[in-house]
Structure formats: structure tokens, C-alpha cells
Image 1 (tube, rainbow, N blue to C red):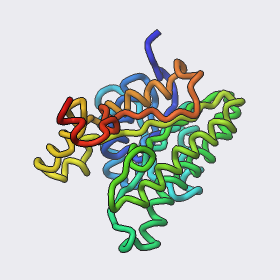
Image 2 (image 1 turned 90 degrees about the horizontal axis):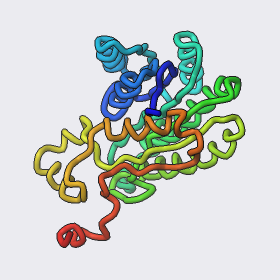
Image 3 (image 1 turned 90 degrees about the vertical axis):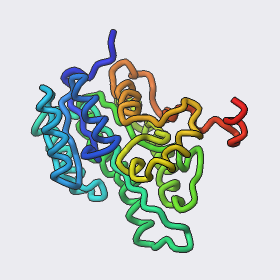
Image 4 (image 1 turned 60 degrees about the vertical axis):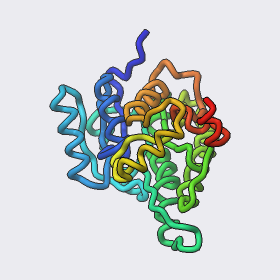
Length: 259
């Protein structure tokens, strides 16, 4: 049986660009009805227009994951449009850089509230309906940065992603008895708008540390999430799948040089 989300109602936060845009497209192409959630209306609606132009089903909903009221309204919008909440994909995230000595409390709170508290708010908003359905798939976009590797200037981001992984494990225990699974995907370097902005030389440096020899695309993350969001993954919960072309494997640059 092929992996399928045919007829499923799926929410994708941060769906207006980058990995979120890729997830929304892949889910819709696989038959899901997608609620594209984004803070920016123009970007979110553009993704919906792209999906519907290809014959898919998608609706835009403007919301900020930092707001419980917005997440409650998001869950209500999915019910109003599609009559169910089968898949919740918490993808929205931010990563402003700042060394610890220069990191303000305001920026720290913004990152933690978006990347970590947002997952809690979104999950809390959707689980009543999933419990009523006696089924649901919650999938979270985490990162290798924090749980697996580090980068100066991203301590706040790393803390949020480590927390996200811990939340996945805790939530999976609470929700398993309701036939609700909670899993995550930790992307490595993915060719999003932010990475493209680094420029050619910096991109080449990134590519050289990836054993697969190339930088991943949003679809590489989306297809991993597609499995975890499907009925075929019913017996998988509390897991975080690393999708990084082997990026976290080398012990040092020398290991890559000798390979």
C-alpha cells in the first residue's frame, strides 16, 4: 500500500515559505486538504494559490503560533473548512543570530515562544478534536542544530529545538492511548530562502561538510513528514528522524577528507 494522505485534513504552520511551503505542497499532492497557516497573509495565500492551481485543496489561515487564541482559531478554521483535524504539522520557526553576550531577553523570548511554546499551543488546540476522532498525527519540524550539533550565535534556537524534542517524547506518552502519534523530523542544511542568502562561497562550504555531497531541498523534509503523518506510521511515536544527508556523522572535517 502506498503512503497516502488522501482525504485527510492537515494543518501546516509556517507554510508560507521554505520547508513549510514544501510540506504544504507535498501533503496536497498526496491528497490532503491543507490549511496553510502563516503570519504573513501574502506569502501564505500565494502557497494556497499554487496548490489550487495544480488541482489540490488548500485554504489560507492567518495566525501567529505564539498566541494560544490564534492556535485555537486555527483549529476551529480547520474544522470549519474540512470537518476534521487529522494531521497537525508544527513547522513555524525563527532563527535570528546573536552571541549570548549580545542576546537580549526580548529576542530570547521571541525565539522560545515561537519555536517551542508555539508547538505546545498548537498541540493543545488540536488534541480535543483528535481525541474525539480517536486518531491523529502530530509532526514537528525540529533541527539537528541543538539536539545534535551546535553553532555560535544560535544558543536560543538550539535551546528551543532541544525543548521541542523533549516535548515530542512527553506528548507521545500522553496521547498514545488516544491513537494519536507525535513525532518529529530534524532537518540538516536545507536550501531555503535563508540559506540561499548566504551566497555561493558559503553554500559551497556547507555542501562540503555533507557526506551526501549536496544540500537538501524542502521536499526531502516533507516526504519524511509525509510518512510520519500517514496511517502507515501508526506504530511510530515519540521518535525524531534526522534527515540531513549524513551531516552529523563526520567526527571532524578530516573524516570527510579521508572518505
